[in-house]
Image (cartoon, one colour):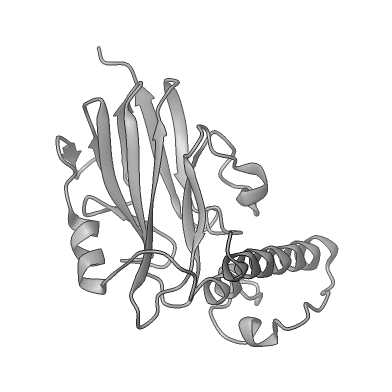
Length: 221
């Protein structure tokens, strides 16, 4: 792991610990060197800074692939190969032994995913399918990620409770977009056990604010 990546990860971890202490204990513990990170970005309903703002800035220049805003818009509207889409029910059903789709964070509204031209649709995949999700963060001042989990989605800090349901089924956070483009990464996992799961953004409070959807794994009838 490069020194730059390690510094970014440590910075994000320190920021999250500070947020947890501030919210849980009702008092603020200053984080050295983070004044600039906390000094901009969106406010939450109760006046706190959204922790995703600090993470977005900390990860903004992280290495990795990028896409343009135009490409992100195209991916947000793209119907996955072999998928059945019900726009009235806001549902995407994929078939086959290998399935893939794009999930664009904060593309149409702040706390949401755009998948197949819909906001936070229900996604259904076959049991045993190899699933690939291309995650794109379209937000220009906040970090977002995605995890497929069995955990309760209303936890304030799901990154502590919402572990991936399967190995590889989670991406904690991508940094905010910059002039270099929008961060993107792909997670790949095997949908091994039938059942109902949730895909959500694991950044603190984002799932509670609506950044989640149903993810179902079912046997073919």
